[in-house]
Length: 155
Image (cartoon, rainbow, N blue to C red):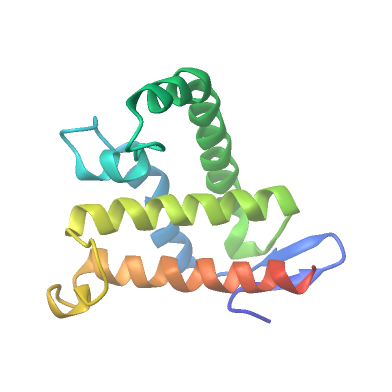
């Protein structure tokens, strides 16, 4: 078993304590709080330019993919929110739900890191380890790794 995740016949079983569930219920609100690019470092981190050296290709990518990416993120966040509510009683995540969890956890970590000003390794020296956003950042990273390892077991 990797953390709160365990491979079962129908998917990945997730069981977390109520306190962990409460912390994870803050993730959708955190992601919903992301502002506009140029005003919120989290927005800039989430929507990095896919072609920084080619503005024409970057604009073309945004034109064709922006709506799909918005819809995909909304679907992932919805799956996460629904299953995190069920997690204290135990829930079986489908492969698609588990992959949505990985993406949402990754997005949340990017938002937290951007707002903390983390841009490179060694950041731990500059940020108080017990600050709530840092604790959440570490917890989300641990969960993401545990889930990735559990998914890898099925390959």
